Length: 380
Image 1 (cartoon, rainbow, N blue to C red):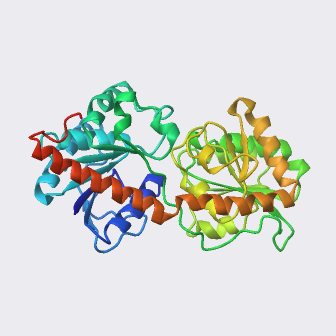
Image 2: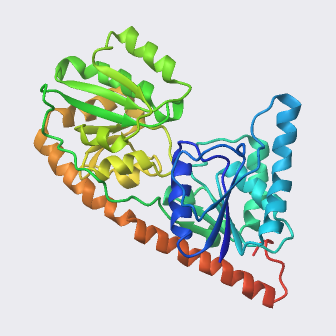
């Protein structure tokens, strides 16, 4: 099978990581081309097999009119790529790109699989794009979502097209020791993610500040970069916790950081299926997160792999949950052991088998529809 995969960039994000895993798997059995909107000399943040053709169409950047023209050119360039490559099907990641891909492939008779990577009930893309999604998603063959919560966002008419496939969670290369302090006798809470409002690091810093004096042998380490990082650093300085809270930026080996930690905090306001949290659990860390957050509520089983807090409880609720686990080493061990077992249900082999079954069905649907004289790409 020849497959074209489309995503805006291959930068250091969760969707990009999921795409790298998917194309790496698919390329073992299929001819795969990866199309992004990046400049031709841009390197993927995540490794890609040499067998994957990496096509970058240079439609990012620019200001005002130039930027607008570049955005409008994307459906046409996707269409040209489809006509040139002649794929059996197209896989698109991320909401706006999904819309552009469907528009670009109109009338070509190619089945399209679109994938939402984040909870659209919270991640707003503007009324115009949301309206466009309403009209374009029915034209896709399947809509892949990471969790049941994301699936319920879509109307009943689209439910037959929905396929729930979580991100693959590989076996961790290291194992954490949640009860064993480091050589200096200190322990730490770790958080991993892009420094932006969605991730809730502002709330985490404030929550840690509430309990820092009660747990004077604990520190907080935040791994990741992004637009909110300077403001978060300023927040730490205002609280006078520069010697207890560290914003490390992007690191080369996140598993080393996770393995050196004792508890994971994941205070996101909303998510899709968070890779960072899954990796923390896979390495044996108990975790604290919020109820009602897609992916977080799937990975953190309250009282079994970590603790879930109602967002309505605010910073005080988050602080209480953190304090509970910071003060109980045996509980951390128990939750961490169950966390490693729990994430086994998202083992790569299982997740990729779901993708393969769905793609086979999508291609089969093309053959059946053509046999009936139906134009593929129209609503079922």
